[in-house]
Image (cartoon, rainbow, N blue to C red; front, top):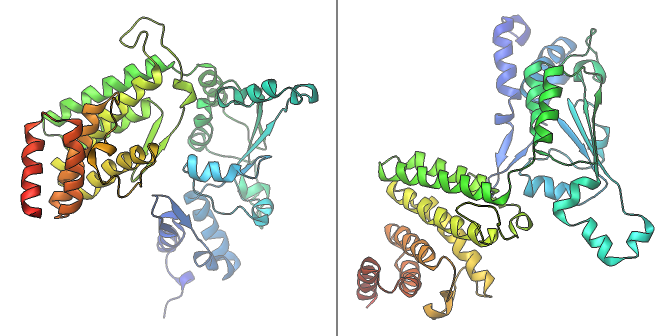
Length: 393
């Protein structure tokens, strides 16, 4: 019977790849994130030295580890939940881990004792839009083969240019840091360092530019929707969300930058003299309504429900209603004077149509009742509500 070492090296590498791929060592969670567990697969490291050295090379080709340290214990929750980054380990073992390629260390320069005695000064210094000016970011690049692994490979530390770019370029989105340093035993390619520095110096687009770009992408999505390109339309709507700092990833949504949009736009353009936050809400609600329609066209009723109910639950919670059941009286649930009431009515109606397609008539009826309050003159909603009422009778 052949053994692992008796078969050709190319076949062994295929076996290592299958065993050590991150995609084969993770389990999905309900929120769209993953939990990773390599314990069973890494047993292969313990067979003998040759197999360890061969499989280790494949392991590091497939998996790149980043070690993050901050002075705030709660930061791990922001990384995992807000940043949608899957964390392998946040226990004492993480501190001892040495096989990472990138280390990220964040430190803060705190206000002086005099400033701490002044509540106004203290709170202004930690308001989110100004947080970065108090932060020091140290990034370390290292070659895990040479730096700290058992049986190190001799030679100059090296991380490929492509991987350096993949690891470092995202930091270009971070602006206005107090200090920023790159160190480690790796020489960063000058072109990558220059590109990163240039990107960090480019200021974020102001709210009006974000809204204009989001509107452009929404309009492109509408064109795709009208042309029957429903999947393309959804992608464009997601890009429009991204333009206004809302990240849609599979079944999750993350909303960022509310303080960033809390201003009146004074520059000339389509949003002049409007409150950026309100303009963002209107665009956001329109995008949700159109995304639901695209999912209905695709007959993906599960995603239509998820997209619609996510917003409906948010609206219910904002007025103190039960997120899942809403109000007994539809008029109590519909927000009188809401700045995007027409689009909100479409969200209720289209979500009701998803419930109807799944033969969940009670839920459909409740949403249709609210939709009719938002859009009292809509004939289609009236017809659907009458039909739903007749079936209930």
